[in-house]
Image: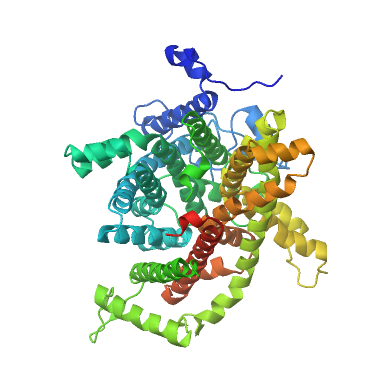
Length: 331
Length: 297
């Protein structure tokens, strides 16, 4: 029998976890937030685990006597260690105790490096999202609220110019000019991500501009800043913006990983998953994969897939929960 | 004739946008090159001199159709780019066709059979799969592709099967990854899901008429909207796919130009990409205006 979703009058009255579960998209939100909690906890551990003495290896510690050592767990070795058996007993063929996921070809511990990469992305994602929110809300309210004035045409010109860039080309150029500085990449990406937010804000303002409550707010003399900031952005756009924040965060991870993979990402003391995949697989010709060395590239791959899965589940769940359609933010 | 004015307005605005993008890229690229004064001291060029150079470049590009000269390779930029661009064009167009061909059936199935296990698990899986970056899929498929389709040996016999795989696998990867496919499926699902509740479709189904034609016709416009609005993603993905799979092409040209500080090549590539994106936006606007008269102001 088909289950139809119907409005339940008791839903509003019911409180607690059960009521949350009965709302649409709640399962996706739960699983997604679980992934994100793991991501954040991992990021904190990766950043402070070595300093607090919780883990014996540092993410940047190069140890030339223990390079290319496979994971200690036998399950992981059967999965990711596909090298042929050597004719002689090489010392470095055997795993070294203490390196859970093995080491890379500079002898750095992969487990702590993957977690430290999460902290890089957490930091970069938060800053990028804040920049894109600031610029997007400003541009969007200028286009939407002051339609027909000079500021509208300037703001919509800026939005259109930002939208017409081939993103990856601009990011590669910026990364090269700034000597692969994380902050330059974050600011550029934040500016480029701002257009979607600007379109959402201006679209919402367009649909709300002539409603009674906005006209009344104008009539009693509220300032434009209060009307835009409180009554439009906070009360009427925050559900749309929350989804955009999540997808913006995902785009940071995806684009930074891609940039790092082609060699134009962030520099060496910071850990990047894309760089780890590049070095672990062997580059354009993945000789590590051909030789059977999978444990160096697979942990960051799994980390990227897990994070993207979590963020997408959360975004999908939130858009179901708030009944946001794709058409709402695709203009 | 009511459509002509908004279209003209759009085209003028698009030209302005093109100036904006190229000028910003020029400003950025100004940091790559040095100017030497009479005493031989090297400095990065000032804003004024960059603007002057940009003016020269634009007049050359508009009046003579010349995109500049590459000093490192000693060839015209348009020559260098023309060679590389054919492949990128095949990749982009092919990937768009692949994603449309995948998205419409999957979206329609997802809307019509929303309670089945296939739709409940396979379609969210597709969203995830398509959200992954291009390079993540490409690095696992490339060894297989090199072994079976890679044209490494120049004396090898090139069969149609081999050629199809040589371009087909990168095209399919580009069509699936980078999030465009997932967005398209979601969009088609919404449109079709809204449509089958309409009275005229229900009446047609009740009479036993074929509705598939109407459904597919109505999904084409939203799919085209996504294609045009995410065109820049497809171009960026094409660069990455080219970098991973092929030994020549526009991405190799661009990265080499960056390495050897050759700004005119990069500027031309950025300009062509912006031109394509802006043109896609104009086509999208024209189609929307032609179909929906409410958007004509």
